[in-house]
Length: 260
Image (cartoon, rainbow, N blue to C red; front, side, top):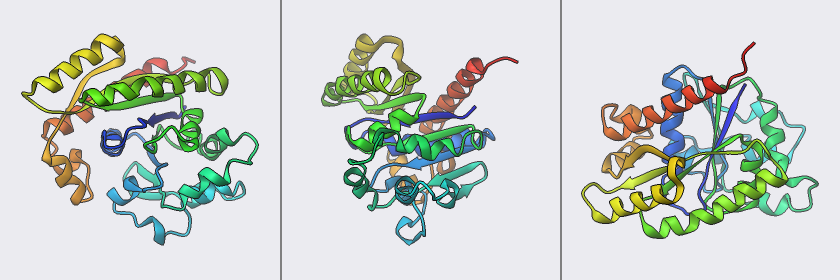
């Protein structure tokens, strides 16, 4: 069974795309078949993987807006066990074009259902807003990971996202589960980051992953090289953290698999 996970936070610059790339590569290195879905009209995920989406014949926009277009027509291979469903700024128009559609919150679910059992994991890079695209992602997913920058202002917006998750679960997708909050951009040695992480754990308990992603220039260097930090600097603590997160997801998935 395919595990579909949204990486979401309505605040920008918290490490969503970084998490999608590094988690995806880590899972692929474990020989899990992974599809990364770029659902952000800015197309940072696609660009970060070296894909020029505006030069492609089809993107996620096309398969969302044309139900007769097979989803696999838009999929781009990235490396062994890792594929991408790319996006460009055409996707911004989907927000408006989907408004008159019946069951508009379920368009992405329809797109991904055609890939059921093709992949072990589908990771969705959500836009930095609680938009119709984000609602589509939550409606199509069975899990959500929330990257959260270790700053007090970042904590303030989490409740809005959790409310959106609860509403989606109640009205559209009862299978949606908050898998965890991932602390990102942790500044070593600063009182501020430590206090934010402590408050986060006090508020949300075991929903906060024990894994912490530390702030490092290596992430920017890896992005310039169109690589994940897992590939660019495999022994870096950021790479180790994302591999540990991949291990946790695989272990969790195996526990939840139905027994025959």
